[in-house]
Each structure stands twice: as structure tokens, then as C-alpha cells.
Length: 131
Length: 211
Image 1 (cartoon, each protein chain N blue to C red):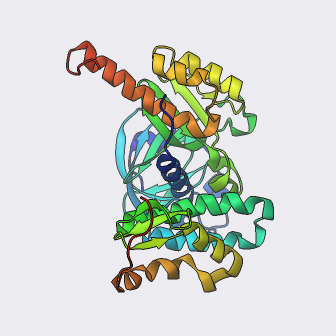
Image 2: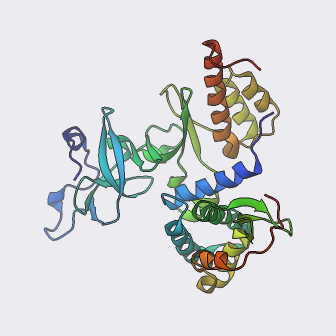
Image 3: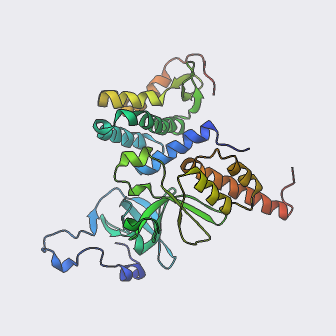
């Protein structure tokens, strides 16, 4: 029986957010739009909505990592879902979204996203997640 | 400014006539912006025209062909517009179940193939947050017939899709499991259905071997 894979669900959620944010691609400009959206919505998001918001926006940020930095959706060492890059680095986009939601621009997803190349340039650690 | 005469001539009086404004009042059907996107639109006669797509909402889209002045177009004035690389927004008019939306709205096309077209008009929700994380608001039509709402209840969704996809045994079997989520699984179901139809047609002409 065909059924939607977890990967297809993540991508579908990311695509839904992309369409609503009216951005053209999963790139740095899209992450800027995401950060603006989070800042704009932070004061009004109810606790009951937070989980859904983090999930949807995390899928979007994760897909930006996949498309921009050649990452792959993967399961981390602690069994969380995230994005592995260069078979050496693992990032949790859901955590990054929740951080900006909680702490504001000091934890902006834009800063995180822009800092990825620098982190990738560091000495790689051994791959310890499943993709 | 968007050029096609056919569209300009059919443009209804969606806003008060220009003569009623103070001469220094900006034309409310126009905005100035510099960051439009390449795209195209389909006029009411079905012809496509290249344009720059500006801002858009569920109720209007700003388009132009040159300069920074964008003209507003309403859903009843065009059939569809595409913002490249691939977002297609379709005019939905005469949505029977929504009296407030009868003037027409733009919805994002989620699927088109195998004679079926499905559009999400979540853009009509006021809050962007609701649009981003809420369940899609879907409408579907077969062979360019009237739009019908994709039901949110599992039973009604199952009934509608069993009718639409009745000629594909695999889709019918999956629908009968009753495990599908109406809003979330509709597009994937349609994609699988269209793939299956193509495979059937290829088999019929002997291009694809039977398993």
C-alpha cells in the first residue's frame, strides 16, 4: 500500500510554508523572510500553537539547509530529526526555530544560517547519525 | 502596465471611479514597487502574457510589463497567474459553499493532472500564521467542471475521492483503508493516481511491461 514517507512529509510541510511566505526557493533570502516572520509573530503565538509552528517552520528551515548547503534530512545521534551536511555535521532546524521564537533576534535563524559555511570549514567530526 | 486590450477593456469597476478622487490622491488600483518577479498570466480568453508579478493576496495581484508601477487585477479579471519558477495561482470564482468568496479569490494550485485540478485557497485566511500552520483549504474540479470543496471529514473525503479516482484500483484500495488525512494526503493521492493512469496508458500501448 503506498503511503507518504517521513521525508515526503517533511518536504511537503516545507513546501506549504514556502508557498505561504511567497518566496521562490529554499535559500538565504527565504531564511531572511522566515526570520522576519518569526519576529513578527512571536508576541502573538499561543503556547498551544507553538509545537505546530516549530514543526512547520523547522521543516522549512531544514529544507533551506538541504537545498542551499547540500544537506540531507537525517536522524541525529539523540534520535532527533535534522539535517546532516558533508557527512560530518548535524543541525536541528526545529531547535533553531524554537530558539528564535523564545529569545528573539539574538538567536535569529539568519545568523545561524549565515554561519554554516564557517562551521563547515572547521575540522569535521565523525558521522554518527543515520540518513 | 499590463498591455492586453482584452483584459483592460473587461476590467470591471472594482474601485470607485478615478474622477471621484482628489487629483493628488494616488490611484488605488496601482502600487509602485521595485522587486517584482518574472511570471505570466492567463487572460479570460485563455491567452498567456509575460508580466512582472508584484505583491498578491487572495483577492488581488499586482502586475506590470515595464517600470515600477503595478496594476491591480482581481480574480474575476484573469484566469490564472504564474510566478516563476513555478507557483501557479488560479482564479476561483463561484465557490458555491462560500458566499463571502463569490467575488472570486486566488488559490495556489496544488495539483493538476489526469483531468483533475486541486487548489488551496488558504490565502483567504486573515492571519499568515494560520495560513502557514493551518490545514489547507482545498477545492477540486474534474475536467474543468465546477469547483467542489475537498471535505475535511474523513468519511466525506473518502466518498468524494472514491468517486473521482474510481478507475484506479490501487487508489481505491488505499482510500478504503480509511487511514488518509483529508487535507494532508489529497495532493499525494492525486499524484499517485495520475502516475498510475500514465502507467496504465503506457501499458496499453505496450511501452511498459507488466509486473
